[in-house]
Structure formats: structure tokens, C-alpha cells
Image (cartoon, rainbow, N blue to C red; front, side):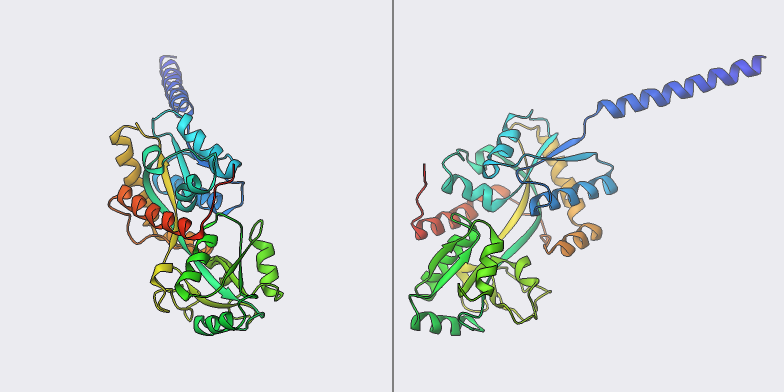
Length: 324
């Protein structure tokens, strides 16, 4: 009898411990990764891949919370309204962070003042490609064609105020040719019209042109990344074709709210470094068409300041005006 009572007591103690452990686990909320775009897009996909690796490698519980709308402003507001406890993290491309306040009146924030970057999750470059309208196979032949056909020389982008828009105006300056901007509402229609011969030049992301590599439908003149894309080893970089000013990448950053304790900020930086350096994460990004930075920037503030200066000059060059 005493033995039975002892066993029951032990079971009750164990059950109590398990219940207590579960209560602690359930009472600790997961980290929220805020994404300002719908599910399935590039930012959402990267955030989910990062969350998956965080769970697998570090046992961290994370959920992706999509807050689409207002070109990312709703997500930015969500971070600014959250507690500064490191439990809410914004995942956003720097082109939106840097360009937003320059091209959208509602984006009244300062990226360096209002966000604390803790890591770079992935990056990609842009691509300049031609379709059948010009049949140019390299940048020199397109330049010659554009000089001979100034009224027909135009470039398609996903829209006004996008990085592609401003890269196009800079390309015009560097080549000293006429380039008429034809903005679309998204990238799909722009690609269709370039393939159909209505528009001679396309400025898009590297991921888009990779899908057409080797088909003979698009001719990628160059990419803006620092290094050649291993999926398109024959395509030169901007620097290799003498267009150093066009070298540019967009990187997806993780940001916390200002005021977050230094210890938590440093912990986040260490966690990001560990996750993005893993082979499983790098492989996941490559399958999605993205590169992982070889090393995290030592001074994110300096990096963001430098990039903002570059984009500011590109916006000025385009004579873009904010619309109220």
C-alpha cells in the first residue's frame, strides 16, 4: 500500500512538473515577424524560410504576421506601435525602407532613426534585358540601336518610384541615350510587352530573367550585382560592362524597434548571423533565387546612410515628384 501511494505521489509530481512546464511554454508568446506584403511574395517567403530555420536551429518560436497595404506603411506602423522588447521584428527590403519616404507622401519616417537593423537575410540584384524590338545582344549594340531609334527607345519597369525606375534613368545618363520610362502596375505585364516586341528594354530583378535564360526570348545585357549570377554565368555585371554607377543590390533586413534593450539587440544580431551562415538556410535562399551576404555589415547605420545617399541621387536624377 505504501509503495502504491509512493508511486502515485511520484506520478502526481511528474504530472505537475509537465503541466507547469507547458504553462510556461504556452505563456511565452512567439516572436512576430512583421511583413508588409501578402503571403507568397518575396518578403513573405524569405521571412518564412528564416522562421523555419530559427525553429530548427535555435528552437525559437516565430510566426509570420502579414500586414499588407499602403506600400508597407501598415507594417512599419505595427513595429513602431509594438513594445520595444525584441519580440516584434520587421522584415523588409531596403529599397522600400530607403525609397519609401522619398516617393510616398504617407511614409513619414527616417529609416536610421526609426528602425534598428539586426541583420541582413538575403539580397538580389537587378537585370537589364532586351526583347525582339531591338534584338540587341549586348549593351553596346543597344546603345547604337537607341541612338538610331530615339523615339522608340523605352524601358519597362514594375512601376513609378520603384528601384527599377531609378536605375533606368541612371542608365540613360550613363549611356547618354534617350530612354522613355514605361511604368506598369507590377512586373508581369511589363515582361509580356517586352517579349512581344512592344517595348525594347526591360529592367527587372535577376530572378525574373533567370527563368528565361537560354530560351532566346530575352537577352540579359548585364546584372547589377557585384558578382556574376551562378545561374547565368555568361551574363556580365554592370561593372564589367563599364557601368559602375549601376551596381546595386536590394537586401532584405530584419529590424527591431528603437529602445529595445542592447542585450536583446545583440542577441538578435548573433542569432541572425548564425542562421544565415548555415548551409541549410543558404541552400533554401539559392532555391528561391537569392544570395546570402557573405558577411553581415559591421555598421548597419553607415551602410544604410550610404545607400540612402545613392538612392537620393538617383531619385533627383529622375526628377521624380511626390504626388499628394
